[in-house]
Image (tube, rainbow, N blue to C red; front, side, top):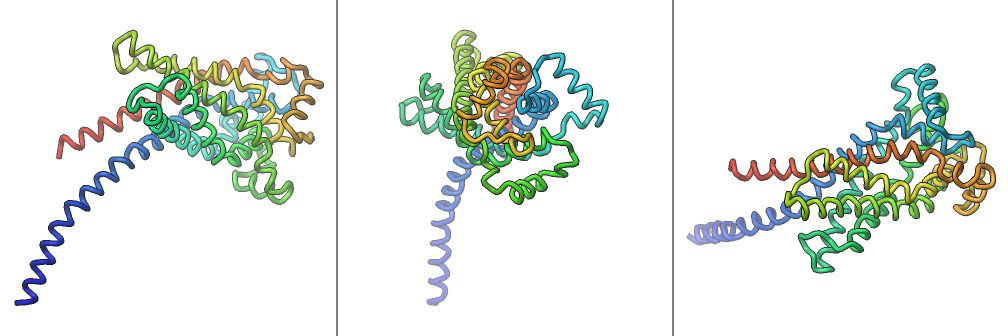
Length: 326
């Protein structure tokens, strides 16, 4: 009889605890799902955007790290010579390293941006609404800085693969091993400071511009969601402004990252800038390849922001459909 009472108490206790466990589990999923969704959406957005412009990106890096004069004609000749010499897919050389870097970078950046928007919205009293201008700019800068800090060595490896012949580095792991052995682990963070200084205006202005254009569009058109071509246009504007603002630091970053294979010894941001300006001038040196970036950047950023938004919308709809069918 005593054992029967104990079993009944055990069953009652279990009956009381189970709903609480289920409730806490659903709460956990409620908070985790948006994070996972934004990580996946960001990864997909970054991968599609970078693959679309990989040949232009590789060409831009080659000009950035050399003293050769840039022009659209010379860029076309370089792309065509590469195609004739190594084949069509050689134009995407280094893209595997780009994917290894850009997938975690974009995933972290977009996810961090969503979280910073939520935190700043709560702090400034705009929870669930569009942020005021300064917090909107701050959220983008913080998101870019967070992503760049966590994935920087991968960016270094990608730059090395883009400017070297395929005989020098066979794969991504080989780049890491050779740099570590021949130049030291510290080399993997060469160019870190200009990257951090450059990503603050780049990410801040890009996210700020895109979010602002979406907000203005919603107010003027009274449509909560822009059309596909409107999202692409908003993203293109964001990329154009963001990359133009931070471009000289991008050139400095690439020079410092590839110093080990180009024969230069760039030490500091100021020293690198001074050497570039003295040898090539301000416009032809610090803004080399900017016109190509005005083609590549808007396309990449437009695809990236649009893909992220549409994937987020799709995942939310799939989640809602799953709830209604239960």
